[in-house]
Length: 264
Image (tube, rainbow, N blue to C red; front, top):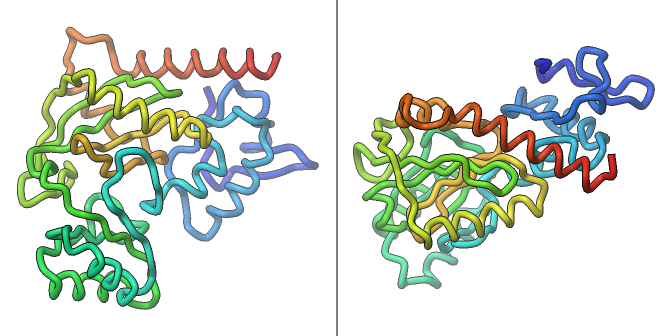
């Protein structure tokens, strides 16, 4: 295994390299995190020249899906815009929704997320979030989130572990916002719903994802950072097979499958 910094990616005489080593020579390439904003698009365009299936998450998936502008199975009513007036008009058309969650489109760790319980709060939240013509996401609030949000890690369409994140206050289930992590046992319906999302992601080039659900609703998907591995390891303890080994085994199976598909 080799580790390269984001800025080490380059094309040398038509060959995609990391620190001048051809990346096509590796079984899999996994870009963790998004790196610096100023070279993110260039890096994705460079990595897109790798053979199909070489990356855990394809360059196109990283470019187009690591955001909250994503439509997947089991999502609550969700809209994205850089116009607060447009989003407010849309909310007015759905008076059956009692409250909304407003999120920055490129935010993380629960920062800037607002639960608006009336029209006045929603208007203020939308105006703040779209100031400077920034995009934001407006999503119907699902009350199930107050009882906890389940994070499931999936590799090549396979669930390798899940745990429950219980909000400490209001509805934010981010551990950085004080939420508590608890072991989770998925029932048949929950497993089926996560598999629906994982299958839709896999079709779009996503081999690894952290899927957050407040059943039966999909809340968010993270494909850039494998958040949850350390949490799962701590929750499962010595009696469970190591999550790192399960991750490695799933990645090996994905590599073998890609070689079979590619005829290598």
